[in-house]
Length: 390
Image (tube, rainbow, N blue to C red):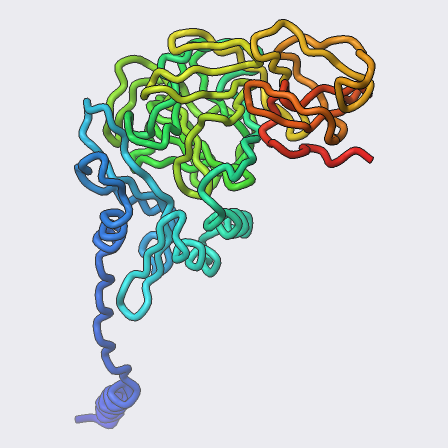
C-alpha cells in the first residue's frame, strides 16, 4: 500500500469512528393518539335527549386537527324521513396524559377548555364563558332584539307554529318559515357555525345575552367556523336539506331559539314584532298587538323591537287611551292605535288595569310625554324597561 493510500484508509477509519461517537440514539416511536371520535361520541351519548334514536355521531374537527388541542362541532344524527331533528353541539377537547378531555357546549368542561385553548379566539372565549351557566329560561325577560330571519318589510308564510326542535318534543322552541325570495338572514348579529359535518343544511348563530338561533334545512348556506355576522347577513336559502337527518316536506327554514346552550320555548318572546304562543305542536299562533296569525298565514317582518320599545296591544280594541299622567285620574291626551310600536322614556306606578298579559299598575311614559298603561302594551318585561320616572 502506498503512503497516499494509507492516508486515505486512515481517514476513512477516523471518520467512521467519529460518526459512531456522535451518533444520536434512536428515539422511541411516539404513541398514537387515542381515538377522538370515540371520546366525543361517548360525551354525546350521555348528553343527547331520549326523544329520538340517534343513527350515529358526526365529529367535525374545524381547528387544531392532528394536534392535542382541537375545536369543532358534533351532531347526533337521526334517520331521514322521520319527524325529528338531529342534536348538535360545539365541542372542545385537549389531550392530557394520553386521554382526551372533552367538553360539549353548555358544560363547565367546555368553558374551561375553550378558555385555555390556543385555537379559540378571544372573542369566543368571552362569548362561551359568559353564557354557559346562566339560567336556561327567559327569567322574566322575553326581549330578544331579533328580527325574523328574512328581509325586513317583507312577509313570509308560517307553515308551522311553535313546536319542538325535534317535532313534538318540548320545549316548543321552533317555528317553520317559507316564502319570499327564500333567502334566510341572521335574526341578530353574532358568531356563526356550520353544524353538519359536510357543511350543509344547518347554521347556528350565537348572539349576545345568552341567546342563539338555529337554522336548519338550508341549501347553498355559508361555511362558518366562528364567523362574525351582522343582523341581516345571508346564511343560506330555504330548502329541504336533511344532511344530519330528519324530514322536510317542502322548502322552508326550521328556525329555533336557544338560550344558554339549550333550546327554550319561543312562546312569549318577540321576534320581528311577533309574540309567539303555544298550542299543540305546529299549531301555535303569533300576535302583533291584537293581530293574530295562524299557521299557513303570513308574518310581516317588522324588524327587531328595541329593548326600550313596546307594542300597543289593545286586547281586541282598536285604540288605547293616552293620559297626561300615570293613571285614569289624569286627563286624556289622545289615543294610540293597536299594534303601534312606541318608545318608552321611563315608567311609574299608577292605577291598576288588566290586559292580555295580566294585571299591572305600571304606566309607561312615551317619548311624546304621554302615558299608557303597561297592561295594554307588550314590552317583554313586567317591570320598567327604561328606568323609573322621577
